[in-house]
Image (cartoon, rainbow, N blue to C red; front, side):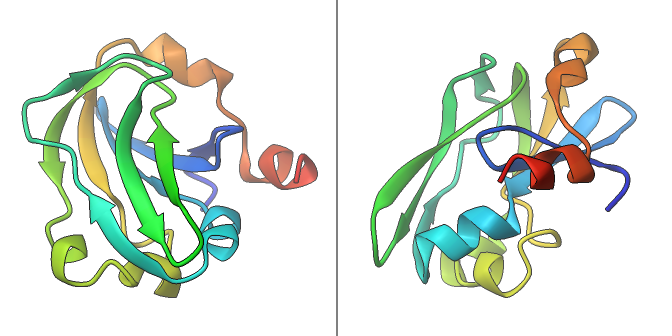
Length: 120
């Protein structure tokens, strides 16, 4: 997990050659409770930093998930259509979307795991 970065909005990012896997943190999935539905973003759609790129519905609430950088969706994790609970089972392995990062410097604002956990 040392290769992951975290946002204050409980989103994790794992970067590889300008492509980022994005998901929600263990803390977030614990707060949501049982995840019932993930509104996956469309392939090819672009988002700006600070925009909601997906919505997650749980037994407790529907919550927008904020993207911590600007990018274009290359792929959504289709497994979550049939099994959204995968995020509850292992949030760091079950990413929501794979995005091309528009500006790598936007990732400089993200935190290490230790910084993120210290702020909880």
